[in-house]
Image (cartoon, rainbow, N blue to C red; front, side):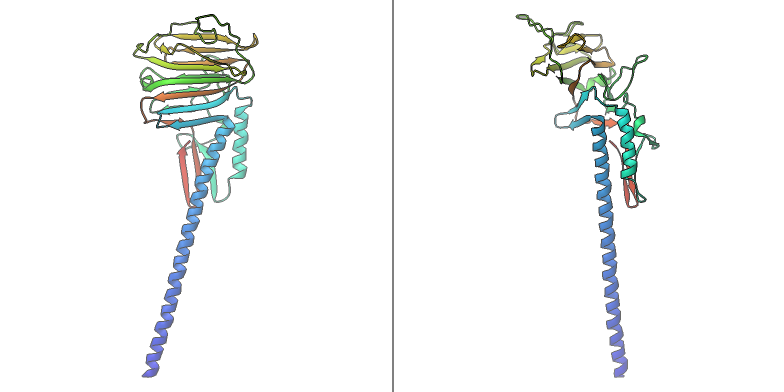
Amino acid sequence: MKGIFFTAITFLIFFSIILYVSIVNSANVERSSRISEKISAERIYYSWNNVRDHLFTVLGINVTEDHQANSTQINETLPAGIDVKNFLGLYQEFINRTYRDKAFDIHFENPGGQPIDLSTLDPKTFFNILPMGVNYSYCGGGPGTPCQFGQNELFIYADDTNFSYVKNVTVYLKLLNDTLNCKPITGVPQDCEKWTGGTPSPTPNCSPHCLNLTMSIEGNDSKIYNFTEHYFDLDRPSGYADNVKLGTSAAGIDISVGPLPVVLNIKLHNTEADSSVTITFNSTDFYVNIATILNVTSDFGRKVSGL
């Protein structure tokens, strides 16, 4: 009887040990799985952000959304000084070689979910601020107008309905190689600061489509010229600064305001400038929609989101 009792006790002890080891092993497996999933999720997250940030570096563009100030700011150098389309193709090759492995895939997609090559991105529809429908692009869309990233001309578009969301626009151009060739006249804005065509409104009462524009140009001698008129009726051509003269006769800047859907057009002639364009809205409910989707996928998860 004692033999049976001790045998049963031994069996229970042995079974308990096996059960304990099994539980510990299962817990370790589960913990290892969670750690692996966490590492994979972190890799997905950091890879997605890394690719996104490098894309904007390749484009030479910095985009900032400030929802406290209700504004979007786009900073870049015009013209870019590089073949942006070619660099996009090279960056696509870099992604293919650097990031892709058997358990990891990174690619760009169109809104329909189809993979695309970066060099096919359309600079005319690349920046859209939604839901306002404000478009920031590099070509006017006219016959024969080239449409390329980082060129010497930029446009802001909005239709007559969506423009109602725009509170004001601030543009700061810092010339990199030229000074402004201005002729100061006592009591009159210098010709670098004065609209030479159109009829700016003296007050903000040019509704329903009145643009509040602050325009400044800085020469490479650090002299800053601030345009004195600020309000423009976008239902008609209401502001021109045709060929703001720079230090050489071959260089200049054309600036025009309106009519809608054109809000603002800036064109550089034989000069280079750092541009900072800030669009302020009367709502915090907006986001910058980049016309491509970045898909980062692994065996443990994925991050698919617009840039």
